[in-house]
Length: 308
Ligand SMILES: Nc1ncnc2c1ncn2[C@@H]1O[C@H](COP(=O)(O)OP(=O)(O)OP(=O)(O)O)[C@@H](O)[C@H]1O
Ligand SMILES: [Mg+2]
Image (cartoon, rainbow, N blue to C red; front, side):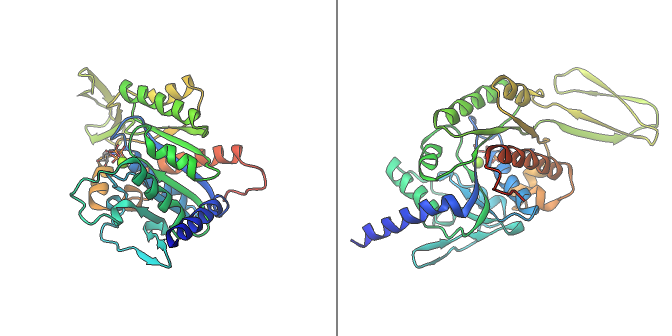
């Protein structure tokens, strides 16, 4: 009886979320390891930096990495009157992740479909999100149960951001994600190309030319400027693939994020690159992707919804 009552309350809360959370954005990729979690956390932090109230929901139940990337690993969630209060991360981002609820992070979580479904419904209906301008949702790779369940549970989803790296294999998989979004009737806000290029720099005699071996094994000549500095971008996994596949599939291209070793260090140390270096190239690239996303959202929402 009590369980039925709780379920009814959860359903009511789930239906209200459609209004209390203005924008809901899913972050997907066809292939694993392309940087979804890095991008989802980066988008949340960048949106929050603009003064928006932002939530971040980590639906990667088997490998929840968001708390680690945000330095929230040791957080104990506060639970009151059947409601779970999210952890507060950098820039005030409200974070909820299965990692907070798993006792032994080294033990694999093996959950069958219905239990997963229940957990996702709890994340949506039992969490005290409050009023939010945006909720960013991070998923495991691929087009499995999780995004399908969220699309069926969370009312008024704004759309999907697809993360890819520029290699052919990743691009092929992102085509699948785009088709998946179309199948579940959720708009595609656009494609982000991650690990897009790596900038190397150095010094050499002013006005000279240096030669380095490029990623394809061929020498690459770079002119040294008058102040003795040189800089060049190496396309580690080709370049421009995200943009060309976005054009091919007629979805918006939201921008490219550089390959940045500081992202790896930041992820491992629990200080996201955007927090560690808010004025750096990576943070700036995230800000411009956010700008594009907000542009897409304002195209797709009614004029009376104001985006700050
Ligand atoms: N732009 C980048 N430059 C350098 N390293 C990056 C970049 N983006 C992500 N990484 C690194 O790549 C690794 C995978 O990133 P991340 O965990 O965000 O990928 P994911 O798509 O969420 O993976 P999974 O599919 O396992 O959930 C991490 O070590 C991360 O630090
Ligand atoms: Mg991930």
